[in-house]
Image 1 (cartoon, one colour):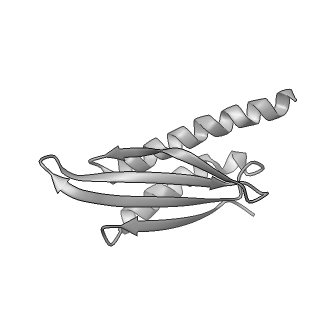
Image 2 (tube, rainbow, N blue to C red; image 1 turned 120 degrees about the vertical axis):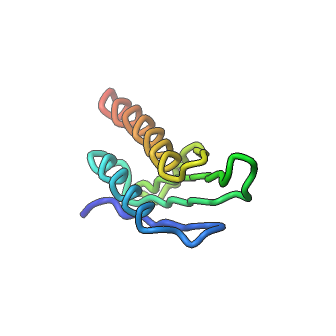
Length: 104
């Protein structure tokens, strides 16, 4: 059935390129479909500073048993890079969970 994803934008209207990036990153997690059923992605534009906007990205994974597995925040001046960072962290955590599952 695939992994579902909900995206929330805070502080700005969002954009199709960000949704496309998030969708592309979600494909990377498809191989862990037995460990996660859904995810929630929050992309927040923080008030601008000298470097411009700062984006804070939060990713929460939802297991098939409806448990919440939050991933560490990723931030940067590029929303796309912060999205990739969050999914990188999620992939690493899921790899560890999958390895632990197979050693039991």
